[in-house]
Length: 211
Figure 1 (tube, rainbow, N blue to C red):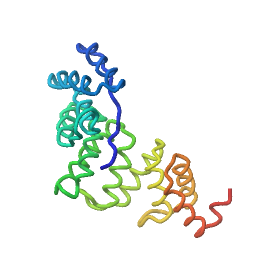
Figure 2 (cartoon, rainbow, N blue to C red):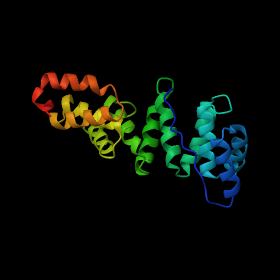
Figure 3 (tube, rainbow, N blue to C red):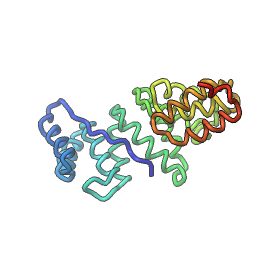
């Protein structure tokens, strides 16, 4: 299971004092106390509290890890426009694609919502659905455009993927220099797999690597 993005929201609202105390409790490791407060607020349709309840269940902080509960609360928050919930919900559907016939389609829907909400990592993950034809018709050009957009915002995973397509993608105008530049950025950001791609690229086109 891929790691769920962790970000506990603070809030300014009618329930701000309780909410912010719950955030403090969570950050201090008092997960059950935080969950109890978030849960009360979540039942009152506070989207940020709903997201945080989902987050605690997804990560198993103070409770047994429960992706069914995480999905339930992420979805409630996502439907209210919470961008992080939209992205995390999409991730859950993406990861359950092998066991749910419609999971990839649901992942696409929520990645698109997250993209519209400017969640940077959503570009890469949506692109991967198009690249592999999961829940959508396979479309290398669409995948490339999404990877390129994510890379422009500095997402290392998107930098790696757009570099691969710049170097060897089918139906993509190859640009070995841009491939090299994005591989280097991804490697610098900690994507170790970029090293092998760089070795291959430099063996094929040594001129690109003369820097």
